[in-house]
Length: 68
Image 1 (cartoon, rainbow, N blue to C red):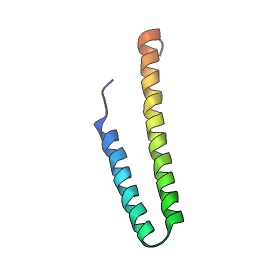
Image 2 (image 1 turned 120 degrees about the vertical axis):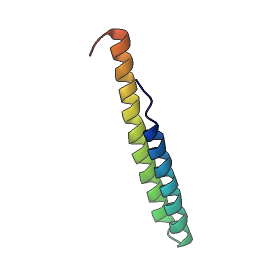
Image 3 (image 1 turned 180 degrees about the horizontal axis):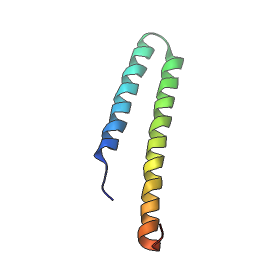
């Protein structure tokens, strides 16, 4: 199993975009929208990480239990 560096850059990119949107919305006085953007960004990254963890557990299962 090789480590996918692209996923790290995708998560970092999402973080940067969400941080910029949060800052712009907060400066415009729309704190509620800024919080929603941050929450949605967090949920997207959480699903990405959950998928990676699922793949990791599947690989561990295949290696140690010799199942496919």
